[in-house]
Structure formats: C-alpha cells, structure tokens
Length: 236
Image 1 (tube, rainbow, N blue to C red):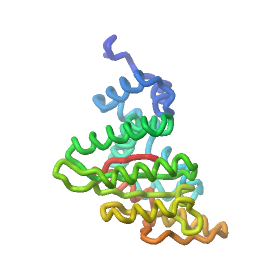
Image 2: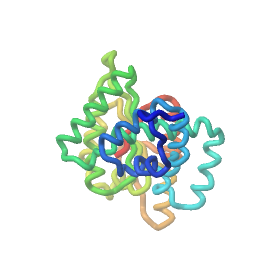
Image 3: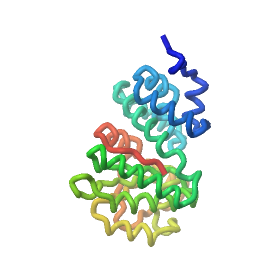
C-alpha cells in the first residue's frame, strides 16, 4: 500500500515524465522513485521502451518488424529500456539551456560516469538539426578527453543514424573539419548505421562516409549490445 510520502504514480504522470513535461523538482523526485522501485520502473519501461526512442530513425515497416527479432529476450530488452529511461532524466535539458549550462550538465554527467568506476560511453545522434549536431560534437570532444578513476581515457562510440547520418557524410556534412579533429582521439570511434545508408541510397542519395568513419550493420543493435554490456548512454 502506498504511503502519503509515496503516493501512487499514474500512467499520465509517467507519460509526462517520458515526454519531459514535468517541472524539474517533479522530474527529479520521480526519477529517484523509478530508480528505487522495480515495479514502477517496469511500468515506465512498458510505456516508453527502447523502440519509442529510436523508431523515428527507423520509419520503414521492415525495420519495425525486424526489431522484434533482434530482441527476443524481453528481460534484456526491458533492462536496456530502463537504462535509457534513467539517462533521459539526467540529460533532458541539454538543448533547453545555453552552452555554459549544457557544458556544466555534461561535466556533471562525466563525473557520474567516472564515479561509477566506468569509462565507456555511447553517444547517439539521430537528428540533423544544426544545434543538435553542434552539441553532439562538443559532447564527443569532452567525452573523448575525459578519464576514468584509473586515469585511462574514456572509451567512446559516436553512433549516427537516421538524419544524424548526414553529420558523417563526405560532401554532405557541414562539420567535416570538426569530424577530422575528432579522429585525433584513438579512444573515440565514429560509427555510421549501414541500414540508414541503404535507405538513403534507395532514394538515390550518394552516401560516402568521411575518412575514418566506421560502419555498423544496425545502429539499433549496436546500441543494444553496448548498453547491455554496461556502457553509459548519452543522447544528442
């Protein structure tokens, strides 16, 4: 039975949290309860789920159908969704603030990753909005420069899919110079989604990646693999 200090959480409140519509104090309180309460976390995952986050980058029915086959074990899928849901609460304000506040947020996030004893981060870009692309480049640079508690550089994967793929395209990226500079960090890997590339080619778009950019068959599967291995997720 719920106490007055911990009133029941309705689906409407969970939905507002997932959509980033709660005020900061309410969001922080709910995030804490989600972290402590497995039942509430399960409800939140059922509402949100990983597929809700990446579906916009995979609009074709073929991709939606195959996604189910990529995640045959619901328990692992739910754990993945829970990881992303908790990260969402920490990072939701990146683009809502100025650059100084955004950098402070990322610095706090880096310290959180370091304090956990980890140093493995997957940075996900699925938008071609200039503000988001610029933010992703700043995040990639700062994450690549960060070090864990043992003094080792963070391991960073920068994965782009959907419209975000344009950031890594030769002749199509407005930030080719910044991408080239990121290649100076051997601990950072730039990765493009081959499925997204194939969809562009189906529409007659020539897709050639910038030098040093690697490919993964599916951004969705790569994210799933990294998060189930304990990597921390950062959305741009």
